Length: 136
Image 1 (tube, rainbow, N blue to C red):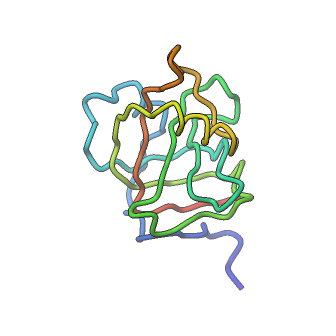
Image 2: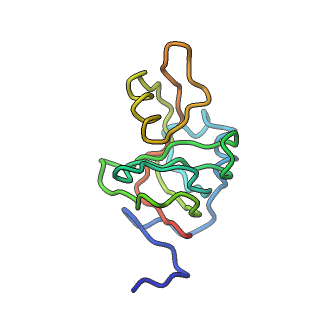
């Protein structure tokens, strides 16, 4: 059995070294867009169907800074009960406009879009992760 004191790993190995708090990365998104980041935070929400996305945030509170994390090439998933775990995530920071249909779909799976636009679309910061470590 896995050692409960070690993080569970998904995808490619995450680099060693200091991870940056997600809130700090989100304060300066444009400078880091399209760059690889190593971040840490809480899993505030995740896909409860397949574990195909998670919301990484500075805390479990809904209003706090956070972003969606998807998994490179749909290549791995996380457990559907990952909410509340501490996470270290390595991946590429991207800024995208999400269609109204995709916003509605993600909301149906538990996602939230505090910056949703009147037409139902949302500008979203996301990390396309190559690797994730979770620790409950």
